[in-house]
Image (spheres, rainbow, N blue to C red):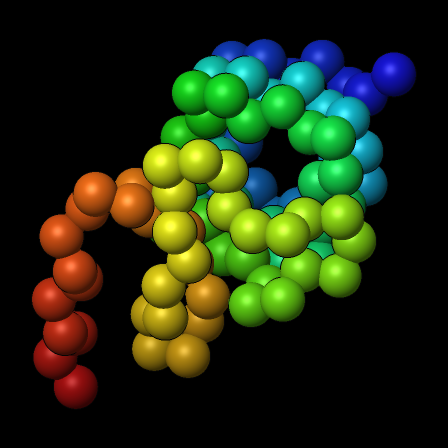
Length: 94
């Protein structure tokens, strides 16, 4: 049985390589969390907030893509998540 983290505030959490197998992340706030190489197989992400979360471009363990309604985008060489209906990010001044 996975961890019960429904409605947890995990904003900016460093979850790199975390084992979130079957975790209950419904309505959790994962904004800007680092999920690179985390195991998300069977994790429930319904209504979770994933805005700006860092992800691996190709997740290695059981995650074939972002949850429905989310998309991976390139943010200065980093793979991040945003709502699929979000407007494109404006370029960052250099």
